[in-house]
Image (cartoon, rainbow, N blue to C red; front, side, top):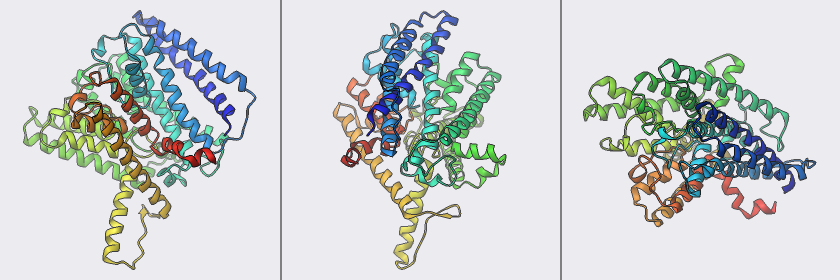
Length: 483
């Protein structure tokens, strides 16, 4: 294990990350909100620590293998999450504890969108901007991780895109092609953000709110500059814009890349995961609309459709924006929407959850086993579109699912051990492991009331969810450290 090379890379990342403290400081200067000093202090601290890690190891240029790649990816999120919490720790108002600051920072960076804060609209503009910006950078980090790096490391499920994903997916070391892929993904991500921002502004948002909400929409984050989230604007047009961009951001970014490169939108139509994703969204909207209509929750059909469409897409893509308190909706809808977050977005998107393609493969595997019961000697292959998949891919998905379930159960039981009731523990675990945000019970509106121990556990759940379980679990195997 080339630890000095890893320390050098982490030093570079921390020094680079320090630049993200500059925009909030400038926002503080523009709005004169008095919240700029913590960001200046965090900037200085990050630069100094980053250079201290980088400079002594600057001549280390080891050839990185898959093991180092796993360790760098995990440390990337843990270290940047820790440094992201610095401005929140230094803040005078609101005065956050260490657990609160770390929870909020990791929630932003992993695009979970769970918050410990209340009275959000009264916070300094610099703090509001920083929270949204964290989600935006976290979203881009996820895309580069999922599309450019994870396939190279062979992490369960993403092998499906070996043929489609650009970049050296079969190589065991970083190459310029990954940088090239990441650059093109940046272009697409930034373009989507600008388009979303302009659409919000045209629909009536102030420039500041438009920029902030564009950041968290394209990142499928869920942070807002208001306690009431999107409900503050009370605008069906803004709700529809949000839904539109959430669906785009929840699609595999390698599809966007392929569509832009080939200038052909049929790339989407041919993709089986995309079609399944749209069917799931449509089914959820129809169910929500039908139940809300039959219970006459809203004044008329238009408002019912607006609420059903927004809440179904927001929850199932793991954004977690709100226009209404869905936890008070009738019958099974709150639990259905929480469960929909387990599916989440497509692989290689900014969405959380287990990803549509994995859930679809589990379904296909279930159908195959039923067919085998009827015809034990027949040979059935699992096909994604027209392509038959090797059994090792299906095995990797089953492995991922079992690891996901195990981590979920352990975290939920640990939360109940802190004194949390079962509904709150279940929904909080689901909301953080799926990078969703809002839950039910005591965490329906915010996470400020739970214990510090519960916040630390949920922070771990966010990292597990964002790193697709295996990437983090592999570090706990003796083989990893022996190899």
